[in-house]
Length: 439
Image 1 (cartoon, rainbow, N blue to C red):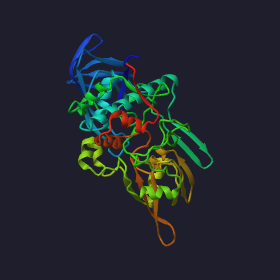
Image 2: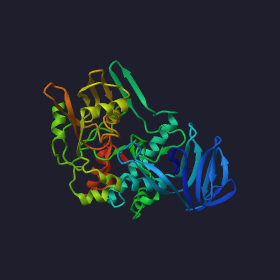
Image 3: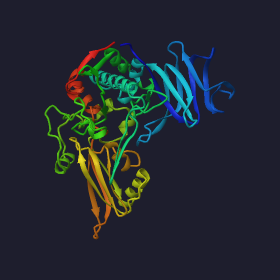
Image 4: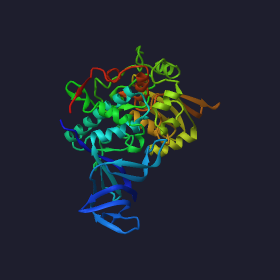
């Protein structure tokens, strides 16, 4: 196979995009450089210079780099709908395309080669200072996920959008990761973080990508859908807990440790696990290592392995109304009905005075119970009640950050720091796979 080129959606649904061309770009026979603004204009895209003069108007505008030129976009939103959401100025290499979304807002797409894209992904997902074996493992996993996702998109036109199953007393939803109509992948956590060349500080991410160029994780001859998350909490999760009800052998439960821990099967198991301090890779207390592993935005969180969120009952009732669109009335109980082997809840019963409903899967539970997202659905519920038995406070005690499927980023980085090589790290999290160079 040849190295693919991909389309990365950096801005989606913006009313205006401002930026700078750091070098000379070509468009429609013209040469452009310097400051620019893009706005919707009468059903087309309008490109304006630093003085507000219209340079070009077209249904889509393509700015083509002649070589190593870069472009800078201002006020790019990262961490969309997560607790670290913010806006940043970011710089990218490659070509730049502006178009309109179906709602008439602006979309900015970066067209770039896979290997160039991966250099920014690896440096955006984790710190450029992380152990080199981990950076190589991440490059292989990210490359594998990307190409597997692109092939799924071609094989299943429109596949992968939100899936909803409604039964009496139940709402089950899960979300695919290839639901973008105007580009292949977005630049945020929904797909893979892609925050431009500004994250590539030391050049070690580029070195890791170059050292693994064209190398993929393979299972039974096919490129693996190599998913990953920030911290499993000590046990990784099965694919079906988070997405469709199928078995993916290499996306199955493993212990994040040299010695195996038993999967969690009962509520007592989950309670003991969440309240324990297991000897697992991702439960590192080495703050210097975490500083070297994590990008700056992720360092705002104190602990990824174990966490706690507490709500007054009325506060949680308001969050549930806003996030689910359902008025549960006075909230009586949160009851886990089904868990995966990592303790992540796949079906949760929410019982109130006006409505009782079971919700799943993993991500939908996290969305309903937080103004942004809970770290994970691997939590137990502690309920404080007044003398009449009415709840006054719900405290969620949890483990891990993310869906828990596949590679545990913090665990893998700790493995590398302990001397494990990239192939050993990948073999630990993706059982039964092999590394194969495809280009």
